[in-house]
Length: 448
Image (tube, rainbow, N blue to C red; front, side, top):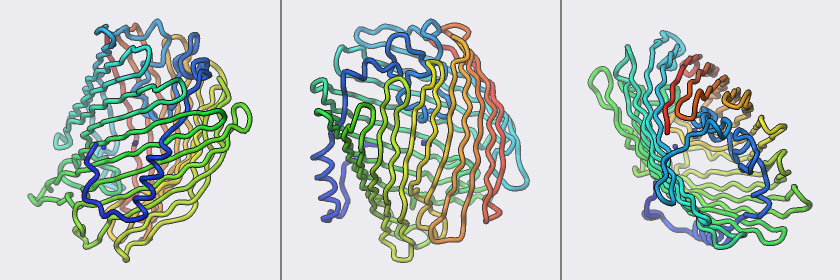
């Protein structure tokens, strides 16, 4: 779950720590682009299966883009608009959720209808790139109509190629979502909590000889709307509103073809609108993360990182525990054949929470995604993950187990059908946080 906005970098108390970090990011925001990229079948070269043409398939575990991974003859042709290609589509999905409110007892099941129109506008320049994506998602529930909600997202992305070895990138995004009923911070209102996020990001990357440098600056605005209860009261969520800033720099040295030594440094600042939340805590903080390891990029076989280091998050309220310790991140995009991609991953990170007495959640996740192009127009996907959430400052540890299987069948370039079975189970030393849930769905997509 990995979906925030560009906001002026203001209302921050500038200190030496932040000035130094920002200056370092601005000075090193550069990373790689080489002619070899054009020859890598995983990047969509001629003759490569679409399923293995993805740079980061782990970012789409839910498979919202699965129809784009079938053979080229089953891809939508789109509408030509000069130097751009417009790709409109609408998806209809029917789901059954066995435990809509993610409860340990008194489970409530329901049927959900999802209608999701979207369009993508892709540039076709010989150099540079400019893409726009807009999507909406209306959800209707048969029994529990209070959970009906509309989500939406608009994303603009651009790339400017200074030359073959140096590029700059930018992103602007707005997203309106509704908080998952199984979230640790879900308010438990009569309706799910609406959230709005605005994200702005700029970055650049360059390669010079065997050295590669990259980095980015990101600003995110998060806003949580109030929700009512069945008794007529209002749950205040405004004390969760905040700005988040991040600076990242990365350097790599290619020791020999396909293998690089990598170092990465991140710094962040999380500034809450309210000095104190409804429980009396000052949750603003700053932190950093430093890692080093090996980067692998063996053409047509495997790409990824294995990084280990240290992370630290310091909260302004002395009553909140400051998490720190081992940091790790490993993601490998393995393509054993032109029809299959396998992505194992590991990551440990610090998440925000408003749980009473807890400063944060240190989340450690192991996952595996397998996607296979069974035939020219059928894509099969299996995914599984295990996550341990350690609530810092309180005695609570959650274990969440996820598994899903999915099939997408493109009957023609203009339409496809699909089905999915997903299961989630959470165990915890806090009984009220435990639940299990399964979801069965079928979908139909229409596109040009």
